[in-house]
Image (cartoon, rainbow, N blue to C red):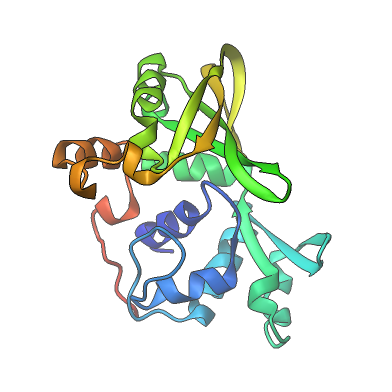
Length: 235
């Protein structure tokens, strides 16, 4: 399998499992829900062949959601046999295994110490979202300090409640669903929703230096489209 294609498929799922229906638009130059550069001239049938091969190598695992609260692991060899079922593209998803994560790292060469990431849970009052409970983490204390300082501009419309900020140092921490790192700083805080005009720049336009810095936060590894041989061509 072409190494650039292999990197592209593994890169799709470094953050979370992906459904087949979400992959389809990105195979032929269309803008989909995935934040990736699209391939051109490829079909879902070709993608399934490659995904099956990655599954046979033990690099990805497939899940079939058969009901709202019932998901089952399936063997890669069984994926194609399910494709004639209605809505199956919404029910089938794939994700990295530990071996797949290692394979992705060998191609993407991530600089883990330059990564910061976070997740949020909504704060609900009487059925209305009034803010978010955030967790951010990084091996770099300085990166987290910058995120906290610029958070109202990063996440426009939210203001940090400074009384809720907690900080701890974890000797071992799960930074991706398939990856753990040592020596990780973890900060938690609650935000409240505000009028975006109170936290936005004048005239609502981010300065170029800020956009450059914010974009650079996602460039802690080599993307498939930065590899020699991009874009891969259909056969």
